[in-house]
Amino acid sequence: MNSQIRFGIEEEYFITDLQTRCMAGQPPAQAVEECRTALGDCFAYEMFQGQIEVASPIFTGLAQAADYLTDARSKLRSALEPFGLGLLSTGSHPLADWRAQQATVLPHFNQLFEDFQLVARRSLWSGLHVHVEVPAAVDRIQVMNEILPWTPLLLALSCSSPFAEGADSGFMSYRQTACDEWPRMGIPEYLEDEQAYKTYVEWLMGNGSIRQASECWWGVRPATRYPTLELRMTDACPQLEHSLCIAALFRLLVACAIEQANPGASYSPTSRRVAQENRWRAKRSGVRGAFIVEGFDRTFSAEQWLFRAEQLYGDAAQQLLMPDVFTQARRILEQGTSAERQRVVYTQALHQGADANAALAAVVDHLLAEASL
Image (cartoon, rainbow, N blue to C red; front, side, top):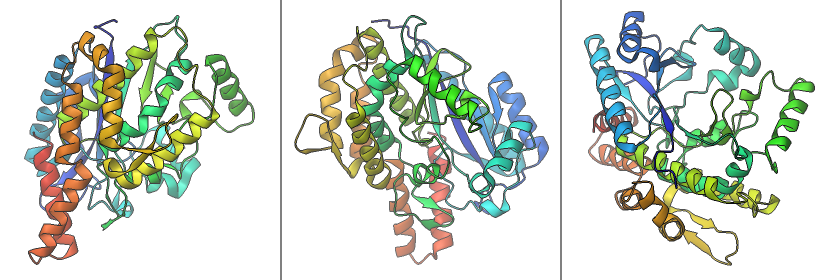
């Protein structure tokens, strides 16, 4: 087991007006420039001017990731504070109004807005993306197939988007529900190996469905610019330790799949249907869902599913120098996901006499505080 298996993390953030608690529709250009200067080459623009992204350097260990992202979040907060702005890391902004947002004027984003119209204009979501390197000699699609059944569990742990358009959506991850308005999201098509993937992409390009392979936006996909598998399904996490836990679990799954002689050999169209159903249950109920595990005639709670993962991958986590990853994941289950904590804050504010808008503002304050933990 390669304890130095390389990975990277992308976090997307909402720029937030500290007075109104709303997502900034058009933050001062100087504020965004200060953020870009603070992060250097690791800064990235997002579809809307009120969102930014940090695309980390390459890491070989979790301590490096923790140090870098702690520093990056701190630098971004310091860059924004003089302008009365703050930073939110969460799947959806409780007080965001898509009608008030201004698009980032770059060719790539212009094309998305042209192609997808209202779907793109309403796409105010932030995700946690994790890249893990796969050796050139290993088939990335087969590795992807090996880990796909576990990805709804990672989504459940990350859920942080219960509120959308100023109201409770009824979902733990409404972001993932909204993502289904886009094509080629969610669980990938059933593809046996990398050759089948290339044939599928060529077919899409040949019939005019896509311009490039990167327009396959699945919850897990082979990256086009890097020799990695990229996790895209998970919500942005307010607490950095939750981001790191999910990144570690994904890295663990990929590392174990790489070590197998025939990764993905047991993945089938039935496996894909199970993953699709579990993704639905995760985005609707989060870690309180009842999940299907192929080969068993009963459903699993998130706790039971995580315990099974530890049985299978616990020794490998030790070899990867991540001995606490399952303890950290259980802590998320015990303390509740961000979506659950947000609802508690919202309900408490209502009980104390706040109206719905003020209660959502209290949720924003809660998220601003958690982003600095």
